Length: 208
Image (cartoon, rainbow, N blue to C red):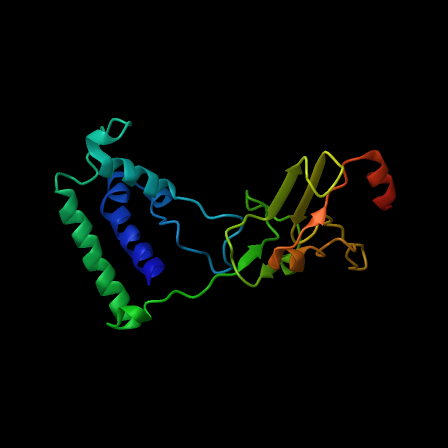
């Protein structure tokens, strides 16, 4: 139940501190706990939210290397605010899942490869969205490099996986390129493909 508890507790803490101190409409930028996901699932990697970073420094108080010019706890003892957020957590989750804490489980998330870029500008039709079965917080590209490998006489070996694929080409008749989504299953199964670093390797594996 840890993820469910921390999500609701941190959301309540942010609402009682950072969000309350920031005027509208900018307050909403600081309300995300970092655990929340959209309906389609996250894209890329989750990270500590902006609001959580500010709250962390506020909790440190005088020990924070960042001078705390604003009292985000509005004069209340920190412990009082923390306990109030825990009360919110109990009320929210007990209503949602019942009083048995072992049942407080959040559903697993899928990773979404969206048709929009990070500016939310469409780069393809909505039906080109792809989903990976399980979100693993690995980003959308993984790389591996080995220097001076003992299993090869090459000075460097390298691999990567770029899901769903490295080509976004769709022909006028709707036919997609052979490398359009050929790395999706590879990514799901923690697979990898070789990166060709020498002229000889590139010549041997090039396609046109």
